[in-house]
Length: 165
Image 1 (cartoon, rainbow, N blue to C red):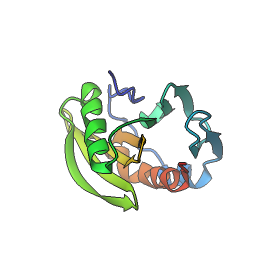
Image 2: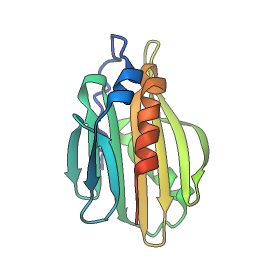
Image 3: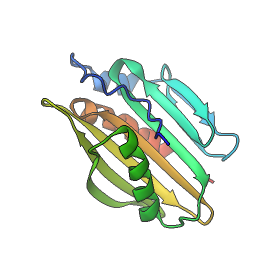
Image 4: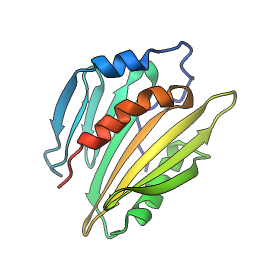
């Protein structure tokens, strides 16, 4: 099973990008997932790819991806669910290393990971996970480390506006 993260991982972005301007001028679109009932907002212009149990969002020109996973699970602990998501991600990102883990908000765990690459850049991954009674949720944010500080306010805004049942 592949994680399905929409991320080319073919090349680090070669040119500087004005993330502050992009974030401050982003127009947001709303999406509500019909099966699991979660809702989120994402920047206009991003590709939206709904699938069974997974929603993929992708900004192709900067190779930035977000995946929201929802599924029935017997795992009711956010840490166990985070470990399961990392195992799935390692299929697409061999060498994924957990860097830090902390409580994001009640019932949610934030895990920061990285994937070392040849050269100066690496892939950064942030996972928000919540294991509930019969359902697990994970939100995975992926970008090149050279873009991470710029795109992080966008990821933060997306995370803060997501609503789960």
